Each structure stands twice: as structure tokens, then as C-alpha cells.
Length: 193
Image 1 (cartoon, rainbow, N blue to C red):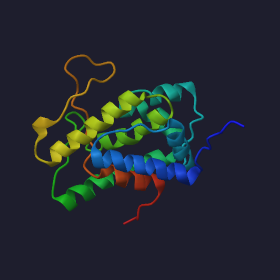
Image 2 (cartoon, rainbow, N blue to C red):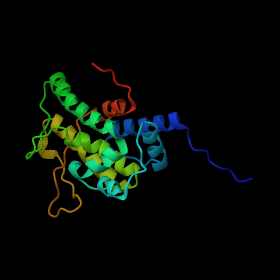
Image 3 (tube, rainbow, N blue to C red):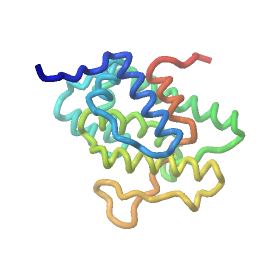
Image 4 (cartoon, rainbow, N blue to C red):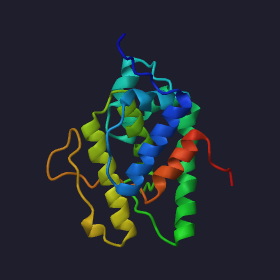
């Protein structure tokens, strides 16, 4: 009788994804993960990947604005709550670390990279972003956040993004230790202070 590998149950999937994200945060490098495990964990946490083609196309977009339809379709009200949480996170982080996070030039947003974190994780889980792009963007966001925090903004990296030409874009960053806080928020393990 052939050996059939069992898929982990929901709590195991959430734990596997949590450990994977922790490793990314601690090393700055994205290792591979079974996309079905990632998708299953996000579904257990409220994601609904049964969405329209238009919403799927939206998820595959690069900008937060263009991804919004897909994110609202997958996450519903959780997406708005996450966006609100990122605003609170910026205030708490800046206060706690006595440090100003970088803002986008045009919009002055300090939460763009944080919103990209959930958007790109969701797009990757949905099959609307390749592992290579997920790895490239996540590693650049982490490195840029670290270099900003270290006071070495000139060492940040540019990344080629879809639809843009030239030497690449200085993409929005994620502050150090953000991923674990975001995962706590997504899994509902945060305290509401």
C-alpha cells in the first residue's frame, strides 16, 4: 500500500507558518514553504480565497491601492482592522523606540510596507504572486527597515517592480520585529492595549 502523506491539521498549519515567519524575521531570508499549508493557515484565520477573477487580478497587483479589492474580498473587515492596527503600531513603535519610521514621499504614509506584508503574504498564498517575487520583496522590505533603523539609509536596496523600468524602486520597508507583531495581530494573539 503506497504511503500517503497527511496534511497537517489547522493548528499545526498556523504553527508552521508562525515558525516560518519567525525565521524570516530573525534571518532576513525567506525560505520555501508549502503554499497549501500557508493558504490553509490563512483560511483558518479567516481568509476566504473563493473570490472573483477581478479580485484575484487585484491581489496580483503590486500597489496597496490596486490590491485593495482583492484584500477586502479575501479578508473582509479583518483587512480594515489590520490597516487600522498598522497606524497604531507606527505610533507605538515611534514612541517606544524614540525613532521616526520612514514615510513615502508622495503620500507620507509610514504603513505602506506593513500593508504590503499582509498583501504579499495573501497574494503568495492565493497563487497570485510567485515565490521568487515574494522572497525578493519581503527580503528587501526587511533589509531596508533594518538599514533605516541602524541609521544607514544609504545602504537600502532598490527592487525592480512589475510595470516599472529603470534602476529599481526603493520599496516601502518593514521595521525590525514587525513580522511577529503582525502575525500576532493576524492570529488574534495580541492584547488590546
